[in-house]
Amino acid sequence: MPHIKVEKFDTQLIETLDDIVVFRAIVLNSDDELFAINYKNEEFLLHLKKTDNNYMIKYDKITRPLKVELLKEAISQIATRLNLKILSSNIQNKNPKGSISSKYLKKIKDFESINFSKKRVSIEVGFGSGKHILYQANQNRDKLYIGIEIHTPSAQQLLNQIDIQQLDNIWVVNYDARLLLEMIPSNILDEIFVHFPIPWDKKPHRRVISKSFLDESIRVLKVDGKLELRTDSNKYFWYSLDTFLSYPKIMVNIKKNEDLPVISKYEARWRRQEKDIYDVSVISQAISDDRDNIYDFSFKDISFNSELINTLPKETIIEDQFFIHFERTYTIKDNMLLVKCAFGSFDRPEHKYILIAKESRYLSSTPVSTLTNYKAHQKLQEYLDV
Image (cartoon, rainbow, N blue to C red; front, top):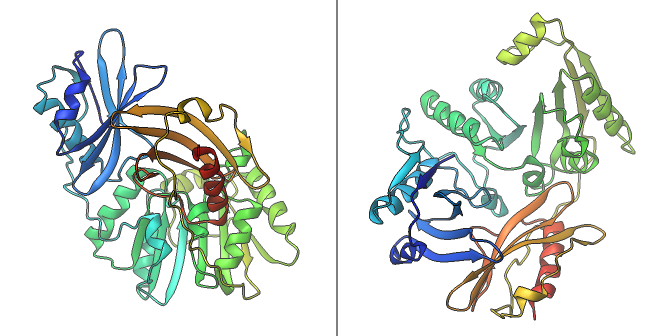
């Protein structure tokens, strides 16, 4: 991702770029700094890391925008306008494919109140190169396909292909599929495709397939809707089958080495190696209750108090359904603090910055509107109200 190394400079000069730099934040017990950037209507942070010999300005993972060009442009402006001496850089290269259209790029916040463009809707989790979702969208132009992918370059590649193939029935979401499912209305999806997920044999808690994922899948699928897992991993197959069969009442179909009309280059390689391919499908059989996901994530009556620097817990707070961990605190002039924290579900946590000021708020975006996140948010307010 974009970054530059520069000779040491007076970082207070950053604050003179007040048309794009909102504030400068300094982490306690360290020399590292963050710069809050507002550029082309996108809010994100840049991280300045100091070493004995030079400084590095790079992106912040939590707040990064999907459009990498925005990061490059913001870093370039800082370096140019402050006349910094660049020692190394990876922001000079131009995107050879041109700018990426964001017409079909959806943020997870959009799903708090969204009208689907087609009556029929399907989701693909982890679309990779996009070959399968592009095939499905071309074959079923009357159906909307929502592609979910946490790998940003893959999301950008699919957006390019949508433009090239002139498709109007694919949305791209660069986020965690497990959280997005909680935003989808009940009984609306025809299919959920999970093709060749990472097995995570050494970290099984990171697997997409889980009891909670199955619960959400059954809820959002129509009657006779299908959750389709396709995997080359024998361990993942048996793990998923056990997860599915543990459900109180369920219909499961199993196929082995089924030929699909379109396959990825990886599947082609596995077939040449004569690896087995497993398909496990779960069929929804009942109408699920509707869910109201409208929660208030504002910080009522929470404002700056210098005592917060010393009173925030250093240990992780564990509750029945969620956790909270305060990771770092940054000081900002004009009576403000920036708090970096992780919270929410144990298997799909949120990572956010909270700006403590006259009117406190989450920086860049509020948490995904789920009940678990809301409960964690309420607990957060208790610790911030001093």
